[in-house]
Image 1 (cartoon, rainbow, N blue to C red):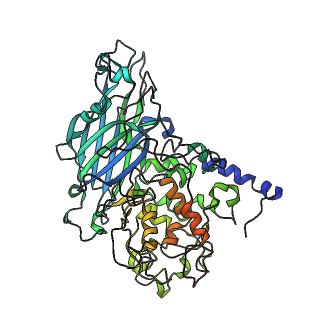
Image 2: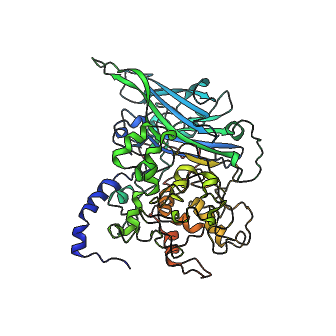
Image 3: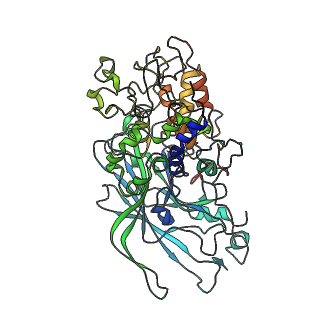
Length: 573
């Protein structure tokens, strides 16, 4: 029964409201100013990371690492661009047997003023704050480096029609500037670095207002509409990303050897010395990581304020201090009527299973499936200590170690119970229908992608921004898929959190995940399901599936070819 919010109970909840103010104010768009220190260094701030099979070039993987949050298109006279004295890096892990990255791409930028006698950014075909870059690659985890692209072109900001199109400006069009900046490295990667429309979409105003998303007055708004970011985009042949010795032909669409982990970072030298008389500062000392990004919203919505700067400073391979925040994510407090659910009415449709199948409690600090530890029912499953050790069922009180933990931190294996409830006959610990395998239990927070998973074309009527959730629903309800436990190419199996496509509504998906949707997909139904019922589609399940933040797409249409992101907003748009 839901608790009524009386004056007395409201007064008792005042500390909770204070807590909400502190915690939900950190739920920014994906790593846009997500930690105190990096908020003061926007040029080095990772905003988003994407990794997906290229829809028009399926033998390649596209990785997009975005930096510099909330760029105003009319931000002159000193428009944002990539920073000098910063190492921007994209890291790839393709071998779970070894700790650390196998492949790293590094980008280093230089800036010049072609006409320092003017205050304009562009005049008579010359650019100020003009950036170029060097791209280096390491295939031994950073021990040695090879320069694979020199003098890469960064297009100017889309200042306005006189600066871009007129004879007194660049005398061209912006599409031409983007095309001329798409480069090919000596090792075959396609590369683009430059300003783009921020592809992330979220109602920042609603989220900041004590979790008011969707807004109670229904006036939802994309808080990143008409803002830009700078992207580092690479398109890499799948064969380049495979670990040594793996055949380029997968054994199945869930081939475990085709799983990669991707994360991005920015590093600065440890010492900056300010110059006098207007001289530029100088830099020295060791390189120090100041920002990183893997899964979207991790540092915002999972890591608490006191740990955010530390999280940015370490690699995914040193994440042990953060495990507990995934076992019991703070957001789950506000999706439980026995705790503080009443404080966030917008999350009302998202209610965690407290008594799934009559006995399993996934509430904050509860035991989840740990009560089955040592039970023969777990034999041979991913929760059996003989299979993956204690990785997925580590201890009492770690309620979400079986769902939020693998989704964010290990990837999901194609091993019981991580298969759809289709064919399980009501037993979540039985074999079901496979639908995801991006398990890479090496390191921590990364985007994990199975490169063998088929592409869902963006013009396919079944394409969905709900990613794996849409695939799970189809696997459970569509007669084309729910009559067999065989592996099938279900649309949107290539969606978040199996990698991340530009279109994926990650805010919605992650909030639904915290609300227990992954548990339901494998047969751990919501509390209003009565064991023995033939239909698990209960009111609570429908509530979660139909939940929306009210902002479900980007403000611009994405391109159909590399680098896929829309051109940046212009200063007069």
